[in-house]
Amino acid sequence: NLAWAAAKKIGIKTILIDLDLTFGTAGLAFNQDPRQPFGEAFADTERLDATLLERYMLNEDENLSILSTPGALRHYDRIDDEAVEKAVDLCRQMAKLVIVDVPHQWTEWSEALLVGADEAVIVVAPDIANIRDARNLLDFLSGKRGESRAARLIINKSDLAKRTKLLPKDISNTLGVQPIANIPFDPVVFIEASNDGKMIGERFKSHKLVGTFTDLAMKLGARGSVKGRPEKKKFSMAGMFRKPQAKTA
Image 1 (cartoon, rainbow, N blue to C red):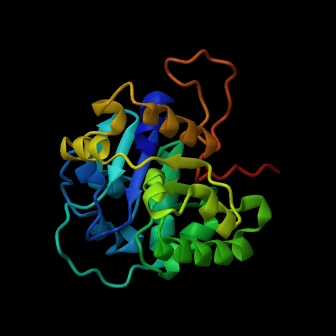
Image 2: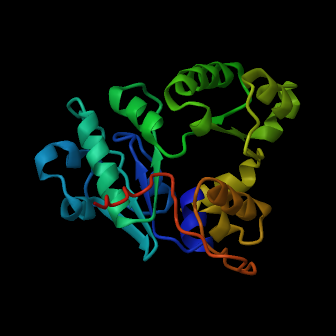
Image 3: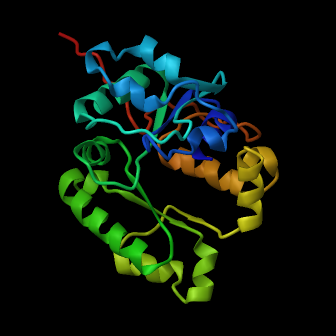
């Protein structure tokens, strides 16, 4: 939904990378079937280039491309962190904004991604296990990224907390971080959109979550004029993963 908002509502070229190479759902979420599993791109780092990456990309439209898996059960040899970094760098050269969905596993390359990203976002649900894991991630990343690049927090299914008596303010107080967004628990909306292979903004065009995801994309670096809003000022694109600046003599 974040990638869709950046591409559709803000109008910037975006690449969404789903690095859950076996069980990833990014392609499925857009009702697309990847031609080849993205994990195959890491088989030979030396052959990895923009042309090869394009073979694995699903093009939702001119502004949004997706790297994902068809969900086939496959064994992948150990993924080299340099290969992942190279793939992300290549995507940075192809799009203004690169959003990486990091799988729920701890590896050298997932650690490197979280440390090196321009923005690291932790999504936490209102339960004890999520809070524990978020605490561990925040503590680790604070030492690696520093205060100026502190990880951001999003509370997902925030309305569900009313039933468990674990309110968003309790979560933010426990973690010592104010969330940049609270995504409500709205199973009907999310399940209907998911089952239709559409994003919230496609299935429910006037839903308030469309504005939430668009504002979230802006907070995380997507710069431009939002479609349907008056244009105030143009900004240069910073992005979650910024393109390297050319050095001058």
